[in-house]
Each structure stands twice: as structure tokens, then as C-alpha cells.
Image (cartoon, rainbow, N blue to C red; front, top):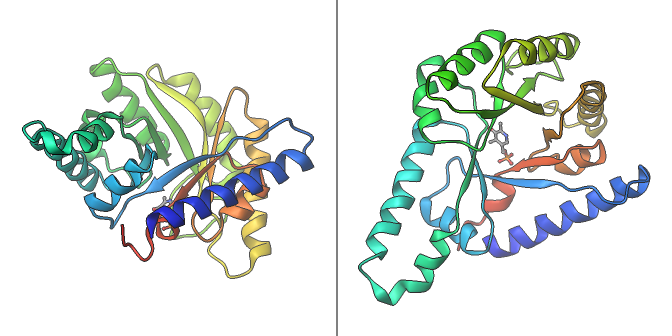
Length: 247
Ligand SMILES: *Cc1c(COP(=O)(O)O)cnc(C)c1O
């Protein structure tokens, strides 16, 4: 059940964060959980939201739009039904949507219209500059992360670890309407935990060199423990949260 998955994952995140703080002599280490809702039904998303979880992530613009519209439609229909007042009150609590997928230029306007709280996946100079231009047009300041391909895998998007530092500073210097908050990376695709760990550790090294950043988004269902051990402060978890998807 989702309620059990959420409790288990939250407690695991908390444990990993405490260990990280202890090893690094920090007072505390806070990790944000982004619930990745790709492939999930609106009912499951609302169930998670009813449990008090408000931070969600989607990887396709059209799916994000459909889900936001479906949730809004449910909210509106509830207006006329007094019996479900508590559900309605729950739904008034905002949903904070993160965009985590590959962003095509022809989807930028549609995405910005949905007002994502954070875009994790700025993976090229061209995308950064186009996104900035579109934000300028609508007078929006957009929080973003640069995506790094830490394991140098051909199947993945993003800046190489070697080029990311210069790219980050150059993009930050050039844009006016993007706020570059940090780095996102997907861990190495490997059964070998040491290889995964290494890809996270190298991403953290890069992150530590960049001035004025506060968000290091790395870690998914299978590898968030390693990611937090390497200093991640934002994990994107889907399948482990929604598995056995009974509400
Ligand atoms: C799907 C996805 C996730 C979540 O993956 P799980 O293995 O289901 O936790 C995280 N980040 C990105 C970019 C994704 O596309």
C-alpha cells in the first residue's frame, strides 16, 4: 500500500540523512522527496497527496498537463458535493510539480504554462538559452537544475562532468530569467553499487565546486541510499513509492 511505501521510504531517507550528517559533522541534512508520478493514476497521486505529500515529479509535458487538469477537474466537481468536504479541503493544499524529463523546445511554452516549481533537466546550452528567452517573454523567473551525465552513458542526456562546471557558470552569466539552483544527475546504470556510488560521488564533487547552489537532485528507487550517502539533498522516487499500487 502507498501509505506503507511512503512511511518506509521516508524513514529510510531520514536514516540516510542522519548518517550523512553524522559522517560530515553537520547539525542536520535535509533531503526533499519528489514523488515521481509517471505511469501513475490520478487516484494514486491524490492518495499520496491525502497522506500529506505535496511534491511531485513528471517527465512528460503532456502527461503533466493531463494530470494537473484531471486534479483540477476533480476539485471543481467536488464544489457541488458537500459530502466530500474533507477531500476537497485536502485538495486545496497545493501540489508542487517538478519537471524531471527531457524537455523538447517545442514543449517549453506548454511546460511554463503549468508553472513547474523546478525544472531538473536543463541538458544543453541551447535549451538553457531558449528557456530563458521564453521565460523573459512571459516575465517568469524559473528555478532550474543543470542535468549532468555523470556516468557518461550514451543513452542519457546532460553535460559531461568535465564540461559542467564551465557550462554552469557561463549559462548563469548569460541568462536573466533562470535561477540555477544546482545539479541533477541519474546514477550509473549498473548492478555494481560501487560504480553507482562513484557516479554520485563525482557529481557531488562537481556540485561542491559551484558557488551559490542549494539543490543536488540525485537518487531514485534503486539507488537513493547511495545518493544520500554521497550528499544528495533531493531524491526522485517513483516505483518504490507506488508499487503494489493499492491505495
Ligand atoms: C522515472 C524517473 C525517476 C524515478 O524512477 P524510479 O526508479 O521509478 O524511482 C527519477 N528520475 C527520472 C529522471 C525519471 O525519469
